[in-house]
Length: 292
Ligand SMILES: [Zn+2]
Ligand SMILES: [Zn+2]
Image 1: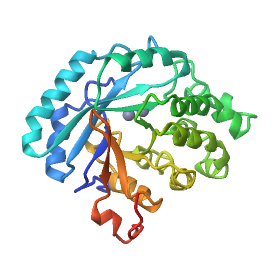
Image 2: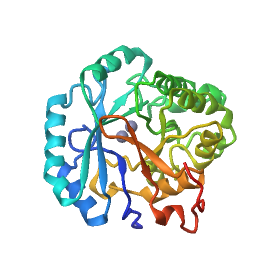
Image 3: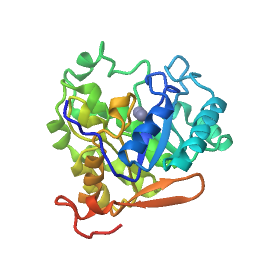
């Protein structure tokens, strides 16, 4: 496996620890790796589900997550690794009221809203082939994209996670080329992000999945910018040690190539910007001085 683990970057804004049901990484492992590789700031964004029966429903309590993440932040801050207490909330209109209620009473430094597979999802491996058959791409993605657009419009989150992760569930039945040929399907989501001011996450986990591109791809990040989008974040979405910071520099480069001079983040209070590292901004693939 080629080493795509990033070095010397200011922020990885999407990480899962063993406080998520699908991760086995103690938080200190990420902090140690960050120290060794010069990743200065981490957002720990463990899963929170509101659908009874979903894997992260009641998996870890807010109190435990807060205590463990803030405890690690105290230990690692003096050593040069800043750790933020974030969360990745699974969004669906069915439980928007629950999410709103939760966020009103629980303080996080940074929040990601993401659409994942529901238990009854048509993209379940046992159902996806039947779902795709005879449907147009618009019809195929509709159950996911309608929720993604609602998440973008809700204004509940700092960032919208892995916008088109449905590509992963649809692989290999629907190609990335088919998605690339239908940018209009993304348009309402991008406009909702612009209108609500929610950041578009560039999620680099797709670069280690069979689809081999970020969620969303470069063309969509550029279109977001054209439509007036000014806030992006970048995260590796690691669930395992070896994926910490995976292809993170590629995510930064996608942002820079689209014209973003900084990432948008939050550290509990108001929004902050995290400038692109000089190596990205002025590198061979960088935008040479384009600014936020
Ligand atoms: Zn996710
Ligand atoms: Zn995640």
